[in-house]
Image 1 (cartoon, helix red, strand yellow):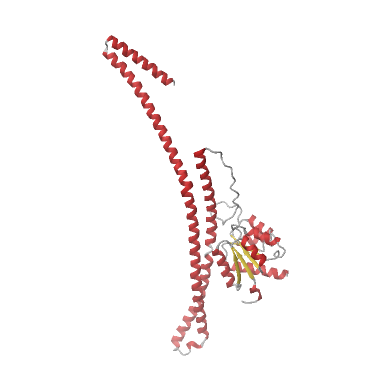
Image 2: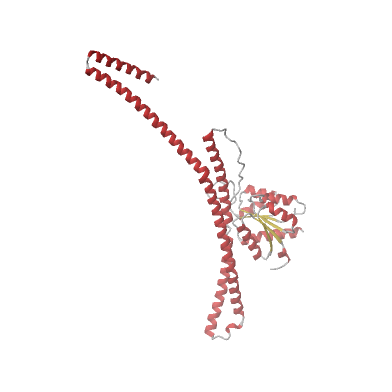
Length: 237
Length: 133
C-alpha cells in the first residue's frame, strides 16, 4: 500500500510538473516530467506481471504435485501390487514346472539304475569276450553310480523349489505394505482436494512374520536349525 | 520301508502349493504314502476334527488361520490334544520358537530345510510318542 501511495505522489508530482511546463511552454521540462510518469507506470506493470508469473508458477507446481500423487495412488501403486502378484505367479508356475520335470526324470534315472544293477548281478556278461565283458561291467557300475547321483541331485533340485515359498512370503509382505501405501496416498489426494479432516484409521499390526531378509531388522532371530534345536532343548524339549 | 509306522496319516498345511508338494513328495520318499494337504488353519481344522490324522505338519505364516492358532486349537481339542504337530516355517525368531513351544508344538523346523532334517524330526517325534504310549 505504501508503494501505491508513493506512486500516486510521484504521479501527482509528475502531472503538476507537466502542467507547469505546458503553461511555461518549457518542452524540455515537460519531457522530463513525462519520463518520470512513464517510469513509475512501467514499474507498476512489471510488478503486476511478476506477480502473475509467480502465481502461475505456483499453480503449475501444485498441479504437477497433484497429478503425481493421483498417478501414484490410482495407477502406479496398484500396478506395483499387480506386478508383485505376477512375480509370485511366475515363480510358482516355474517351481511347479521344475518339479514336474524332476518327477518325469526321476523314474527314468531309477529305471536306468535298476537295470544297471540287475545286469551287474545277472550273468549278462558271460557270453561276451573277456575284454568287452570287463568294459561292460565297468560301464554298468559307472551307470549305477551316476544314476544314484542323478537321483540325489534331482531330489535336491525339487527341495530347492522351496525358494518360491520363501520369496513369496517376502513378496506378500511387500504387497501388504503397498496396500497401505495406496490407502495413504488416496487419503492424501482426498485431503489435498477437499481439505477434509484427517482420517485416523489404524492399519493394524503387521506382526513380525516372514523370512529373514538381509539388511532388514528382524529382532532376535536364530541362525539356523542348530540354534532352533538348542533353544528347544533349553526349553526342555 | 513299509512297516506299520508308514501307515501314518499326515496332514500338511501350507499356503504355498509348491511347499506342500515338496513336503508331500519328501514324505512319499520316506515311505509315508498317506498325505493330505490344506492351505491354512481354517481348512485344516475341520479336516483334523473330521478325519483320522496321526501327524500334522504346518507352516506358521498363512492368511486366514496361521499355524500357531491352528496349533492352539488342536491342543484345546481333547481328541486332538496329543496329535504330533511339527511346525515347518520360515519364522526364525527366538520369541516365536518359544511361543510355539509354549503352545505345545512337538517339533520346529525352519525353512529352508533339508530332507535329512525333516526325516530326523519326524522320526524323533514319532519315537517320543511311541515311548510315551
